[in-house]
Every structure is written in structure tokens, then in C-alpha cells.
Length: 435
Image (tube, rainbow, N blue to C red):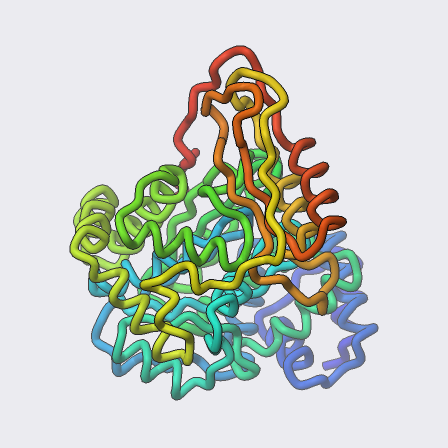
């Protein structure tokens, strides 16, 4: 089989066979063809697309391009969650231990942040000593022992995706829906899950800003996942403003711990945790309904078992356990600045993308791949949409290493904030569930 023929076939609108897609995946995983040919094929897919059967076959081939997680000996139902990314979205940190406390095995494989969206691995590394790069035996042992593990993709899980993902980023082919679906689901298929819940963000801070595009992706993900034999639902959630009350790595660890302690101040964050968790339990057969699953999650917050498991996870992965009981031990930026409201009224908008950009300017995120992070940098959002403010009242606290970064971050934050005379009615963060 010549790879050149596959490029030409897709360029001309042809339909690939499962065998051809297996060859593409093997070529990407093992370096059998040059990057320029893989890049040409990716562009052909972007321009010509793939049908549902092709997408399932590609995803399965990518999942089979390396090892699987190998959790078969664990008797618990295995479930995971994936988010398409947003601002303040550190939900995995609280969700995974709560799901494990409810009886699930949760191999929570996550990634890093780039641009205005944060990454779960970066947040975890804000905990001194926390190791996110684990080998497969370590991951298996921890899931068997604690019920969950928080880790980054290993070199042997879906290696075809690692190659194709890097090339997509460098060749302007990221928006191709079949490639997005294959990238997300190949890693989940390699986990050999009994249930998967997808959190598809929509709004200013999401990959897709309009509901129609986000719904289209969600439907494609659910169809492909079911084609792989993996029970799945997609939950469309709002990302018009940041999720929760904190944006930044150590700050979002704080948010997760506060949620696990029973703090309900960040009601949108808690709603997201309980909705996703409720569906995980329902799909895995541990709850009759999503609402019953969410209620079970609440019990695990109330009795402290979710917090206990998170503490044990930090210890097992080499992190400084004392920070979970004393949040003041988390990294802090050198300087802080209180931002005050310029007028009286009600917060009517807090643009998530601009707040994410503010976090990058403060040092909490990456403008380019290898940029170093300031784990203590970020924003505390004292006021969110629907909150009343008086003129001169604090609306946010910014954290950064120097005055220049504080100034840049404040300018971007103020551009994100809108205060209006009329009250804005806060709405549910959940827009729709796609089965």
C-alpha cells in the first residue's frame, strides 16, 4: 500500500477502507512515512471530510496503535470524563476522587494548557512534587488501590494520536471534525472504558463559540463512541464566563479542595461536577438516574470521602500532602492587586476568553508551547454574572510576579467585565445533554 495513493484518494473525495486507515495510523505511530505526506493527508481530510464509518475506523485504529491501559483485572466499572477545554475548568480535580468514592474506577488521563484554556496537568503540578508522568504499571496499581489516577498520556497509549495531533497544530488542520473526534476518543478507547461523559463547552471561552458547532461536535463524538462500543453522553455546558471563582493553576487546586470540603460558593462549578458525575454513575450502572448519581456525589462531599481520596492521590503521586489541609502552602505569586468596580450596577458579562487571556498575561498560562508557568499567578473572581456591585467595591484580585504583568492582566480583565444597571439572571451552566 502506497501512502501517496491514500493522499490522492482522499484528495479526490474517496472513502477510505478500515485497512487503509489502519495503515495511516500505523504509519503515524511508527514513523513509516515522512511528516510532509501525513500533513498532506490531514489537509485532504480537512477539505474532503470523513463519514461516520471512516471516523469510527480511524479512531479504533489510533486506539490500537499502541498499548491499552489494561485495567481488566479491576472489578469496578471504569468511567472517565473529557472536557473540550475552557477557563477555570479544573473540574477533573474534584470529579475524579468523588467518582472513585462512589465506586467507579477512573483513569483520568489529561493534558496541558495552551493559550487561554488551562490544562489539568499544569494545575496538578502546582502541588509541589506531584508527578503526572507515570508508567502503565503505576497507573494500574493506583487505580486498583484508590479507584482513580490523574496522569498524562504515556508514550505507548495511542501513539498515532501524538504524531497526528502535533502535525495538525502545525498545519492548520485542527478544525477537521473527524480528526478532533479521533484524537479525543482514541485515547479514551485505549482506556477500555465502560462509560464516558463528554463535557463539550460552548461560548466565548470555548473552542466552539456557537451552539450549533458545539452540538455538531458533540453528536459526532457520541455516534463515534457508540460505534466503538463505549456508552457515552455529551453534556453541552456554557463557557461565556469562567467556571468557578478562580483562574490559575494553584488557585484552581484551591477551588477543587474547597468544593470537596463542601463549599458551594462556586455554584456553577459544583453544578458541572455533579452533572458530569451523575451521568458517569448512570452510564456505568451505579445509579438509576443521573439525578440519583449526582445525589450520591453530594453524599461523598458531605462525608469527606472525596477529599480523603484526593489527599491519598496527592501522596501516592509524590505531592506535598500538607497543602490539601493548609491551602496557604500552595504557590503564591509575588504581587497581588485588587481591582475595583468603576461604577455601581450588576455584572452583566465576564468574557471567558478575555479572562483566559488575562491569566496568560499574568503568567498563569502559555502563549507558546514551552513557556514556563507561574503557578501562583491568576485571578480570584470576587464578582460574576448576576452579582451586584457598588462603585469602588472589589470585583477581582489579580496575582502576578511583577507590576508589568499586573498592569497587562488588569487591562485585559477590565475589558472582559461589563457592569450594567439592570440585573442579569444567572442561568444553569448545563445547556443540553446529547445521548
